Amino acid sequence: MKFDPEIRYRCIQCGKSCQRDWNIWTEPSTASGALRTLQEEHLIEEDGRCRLARDAAGCAFLQDRLCSIHSQFGYASKPVQCQQYPILLTETADGLRVSASYTCSAVLQKSGLPLEDQREAVEDLLRRGATIKRLTSGSDWPDIQRFEARFEPAFVEWGWDSALRRAIRTMLAGRLAGVGGTPADWWDTHQGVRLGQDNSLGWVLGALLKPCLAQHQSQLWQAVDQALLESGPLELPEFGYRGSGQEILGWARTPLDDEADLERYRRSLWFRKQHLLCHSLFPGMLMLWTVGPLYRVLARWCGSHGALEKMELNLLGHSYVAQQIYPLICDYWISTYAYDGGGHK
Ligand code: SF4
Image (cartoon, rainbow, N blue to C red):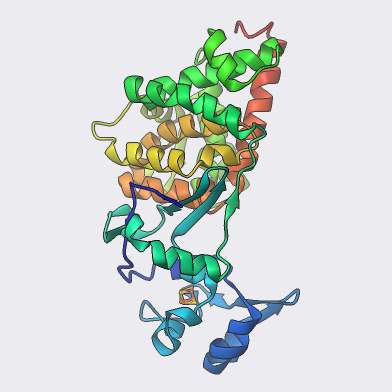
C-alpha cells in the first residue's frame, strides 16, 4: 500500500457527506441486523439490494449531524460505503494507492493524522469489501512508467501548467502523425502542435463547468455555452455572478495569487492515478491540465475549498462524468485538427 502524503484525516463530525444526495447501498447482513432494528421503513429494497432512504436533509439515519446507526450500534454496523468515506482506493500494478476525497471537510482542512498512520483502519476496510477503482488506461504499466519518468521532473522544473501543455501537445501531435509509439516516445520526438489559438478553452471549460452548477437546466447550460463561445453576457444566480464569458475565460487563463490548494489537489490526483482512469493517457493529461483553469474560475465564485469540493464531487472523485467527457473532448480535438490540415491550426 502507498499512502497519499497530501492527506490528513480525522472525522470532524460535520455531517456534510451524510447530507448529500448519494445512494447508500447496504450489504444484506447489515440490513437484516442493526438497520432493521432501528427503522425498517428507512430501507428501500431495489433489485435485490437495499438502499437507505433519504429526504431533502440527507440520509434518513442522520440525526443532529450524527449517524444514528453509528451512535447506537457502533462504527462497524454502518454500511461499508459509509465506513470507507472519504477514503479512495486505486489498484495499480505497483500496489494499492490510498488517498481521500476532497469533498470531506477534514481532508480539505488537513485536519487529523497523516493517512499513513491509519494503515490498520484501511486494512480493516479492505477485509470488509471496500470499493477499489481500477485503471482504465489503454497503456501498459511499463509504458506508463516510462512516460511518468519523463513527466515528473518536467512538472517539478516548469510547474504543472507548462509540463501538462507540453504533454498534451506531444500526444496530440503523436496521434495526428499516426506513427504509433507510446506517449513517452511522443514526448521524446515530437515538438507538438500549437494550442490555444482557437476557442477550444471556451468549449472545454463549458463542458466542465456545467456539471459543477447546482441547477442542471438546459436553458442555463445553453447560456453558459453561448457566453463562453461568443464572449457574451452570463448570469449565474447560484454564485451571485453577473458578467461575461470573456471575463470567465480571462479568469481561467490567469493564475491566482495563492494556488497552494490547487497544487496540493493536483499532487493528490497524480498520486491516486486519476489520469489513468480516463481510458488513455491523452484524455488523462487533458483532465489534469483543465483542473487549473476550472479551479481559477470556481475559486473566484466560491473560494478555494469550495472549488476543490465542486470539482471532486461533480467531475473527478465521485462521478464518472470526467471519464466520459475527456475522451470525447480528445476525439473531437483530433478530428478538428486533422480536418484543419495536420494540426497547423
Ligand atoms: S448511514 Fe450514517 S454514516 Fe451513512 S450516510 Fe447515513 S447517517 Fe451518514
